[in-house]
Length: 139
DNA sequence: GCCAACGTTGGC
DNA sequence: GCCAACGTTGGC
Image (cartoon, rainbow, N blue to C red; front, side, top):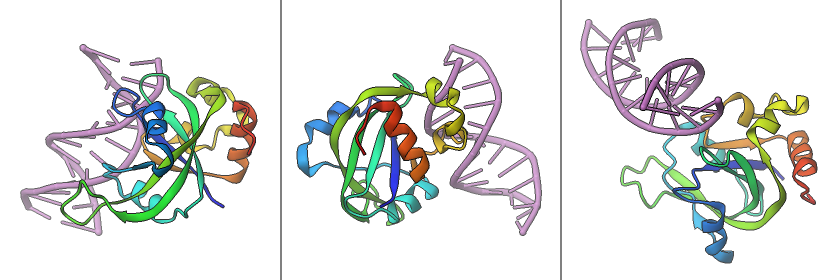
């Protein structure tokens, strides 16, 4: 099973906001980046991911899961953009800040560290295990 | 609030 | 198809 990371500004849409949507989750719409879209196209129902708060907090704060595979973005009329639906699983026991991730030698290759602008990122199995360890998540 | 990094657009 | 200009993101 592949793993992912989703970024969101908590001012706009926070992990708590996602949790409030419950089991049905939320369409991850508004993504207007081809790389990010391609990652969403590759997602399978049940894939787990991390939820990262950008700008404010700058930390991995929760665990999420894909509940609906790729489909047209309802906020896009052009037919270009697609997205998945995700739901909150549970918050992590201990948020992992960007500064901590940058300071962790084993995470230097992580997209979060090396390509901060990509809003939907793949997470390798190795990175997943390390972040689970650092956040106190039972994978 | 600034600015660097990156992606996208459009003229040639 | 190249590349300059522009807009956006996001860390600081």
